Image 1: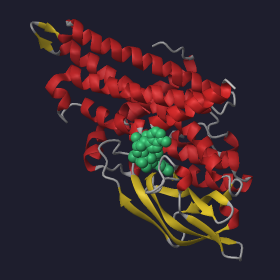
Image 2: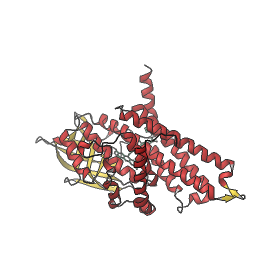
Image 3: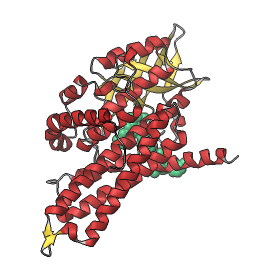
Image 4: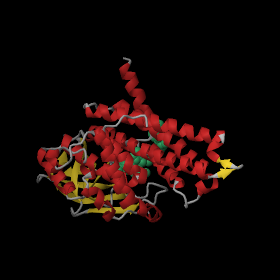
Length: 377
Ligand SMILES: Cc1cc2nc3c(=O)[nH]c(=O)nc-3n(C[C@H](O)[C@H](O)[C@H](O)COP(=O)(O)OP(=O)(O)OC[C@H]3O[C@@H](n4cnc5c(N)ncnc54)[C@H](O)[C@@H]3O)c2cc1C
């Protein structure tokens, strides 16, 4: 591979690969069919601390750099990206509370996640997707030091399995504000589950808030500044989504090469056919280039950069590549690639969402262009 790894990184990758191959992989096909992933399947990952890898040690995490964390999550995504994203969503939500919340909020959040629980980050609503600022859920002060939350969030990753939620509401005359909500708060409930074409080990649901009363110390960050908190958080999660994308692509390449070496047509393995070679070579080019781009973005984040433009470029490039790479894998398998008996059709289904969530690739291009306009002022 084009990346240079340290001995320590290679050992960690090996250890995680061994765990996911043994504990998770045998269950993936069935979970994909059912569209759910039992929480018990996360126990081995939680026992290894994978849900808090990049969280500082003072909050009970491993304090690992983003670069190494990303390498490990690529490995998990090779087995299943939805499984990996359940953990990513959790530590990104916690990281946001550490960055923008009070030390007490961060400690509370970390204590819950430290017990092996999950978190969810919900801004999207039926009428507010790409235009997240158009959200309509409200937080109204009750005059007794509390806020009353009302509204419905859609497409919330970890909606069902989470114990803690960061969700966004409009305070009248103040603006969009982030709140931290416990699952068992009266008036809160989990709504409909999405029956998705792919990424089916990650649960996606509506969240319903009906007169949910939370004390004002549950506001995360500055009231009215929730949108910028959400956008900064997406910079971080986009980088991790990209590393999961590399995992999906690497798996597609691994499967396609292995199959092309054993499948014979016209008296020789199809890997000897030049047009199949072209499909495989194009896949390898995109996998390696994507991995290098992700690695560079992670290094920038380790140095404290917000990666607004770089994160958008990385997410867009990697997730566009994913469509071609996973489709090529199906092509290399021929008719068998279209069958559920082989793993590549799932990779192609899983890949599509990556161009849509964490801000669609059209919106990423708008962001990149806005950054360019500023840079060239
Ligand atoms: C599986 C899944 C998991 C998700 N997880 C979460 C989560 O955990 N938390 C959360 O808050 N949200 C989550 N989302 C929501 C996701 O971020 C939104 O679906 C996404 O931002 C797009 O919004 P939309 O679906 O409303 O599409 P729309 O905004 O309606 O967009 C429709 C189309 O129009 C294009 N478009 C819209 N505006 C523009 C523009 N200005 N310029 C160019 N093109 C434009 C879009 O690119 C897209 O192609 C998830 C979604 C899915 C499907």
